[in-house]
Length: 411
Image (cartoon, rainbow, N blue to C red; front, side, top):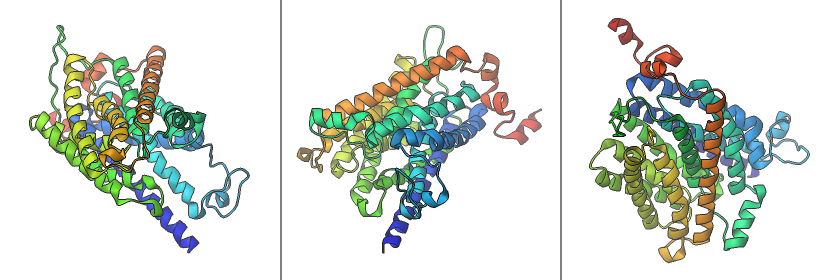
């Protein structure tokens, strides 16, 4: 029975890892559908290569930073058949699939950032930034929240009576990714032609709405692995997490539809806004609280996406700061509201714990983003030349367009 239980847990976590890995194709197609045709290949290559860089960085450095565990022991120890001094790995390779699962979260940070810096970021400096972020920056806050690093959770609980609850990463993943992206976007500056000399925004339409929609659908489907399987064991799975995720998603869709005046980009991103926001409290919300959290997130995304581009002149191509940074921040705080028993939640959370924990994550990520991309800009440069940006990242970096046969015919 013990062997069967460990095998079931391994399969459960592996299934979650595969679902979240599939979400990276959603990130890719969401970007492909949003950017101009001349930058579609770059979007696809970036997401895939970022995942590869993230895997290496997290395997050798990041996982150890977060949890104090490394994999530089023999395979018998890794699979739980032998014991290494200082750490006992789970039976049937449980800790190996757990690594895979948590890696897919870590690799989501560069995937989130990719959408904000699209169409004008140099390729190799971004890969370097991805490696640093996944090796050091993200795991540090991951370990503070989901581990026992730096005594952060002990301090939160001692100060405010409750630990900081972020069940599936509204703050750890989404807010951290979104606020790092803000630094990257500001350091890069706006795309050519995005604003007139007087500062008026010039609309750049998406290249392919069906691809954009496909990206949203893939992310929505994978998100149920992202949230539900954050339990990390079959015995801890709870259908409440699934229903809360569903309710938050549809809440975001409906309010984004209304606030965005039927715009398909807002509708499909509204679903994601709701899912971003529900991650933190999906294990403690009542479904009505999840619906309200997602509905508010849909409105936050629409209005702050517009303000970001039109009022503040921040050219965040996919709106990753409003979507992940701000909706993620709202989700962390919302857990301290709708997770309370007074609002039908399960309790065990506190408003001040959630507020302080959420703001700490956002501030940490914002500083990290400005520092990393500021240093890269000063040392090697982070932006494509005007000529390369005009040609598009596909031809300038990868030397091939999204439809090579058509390019040959057109010549």
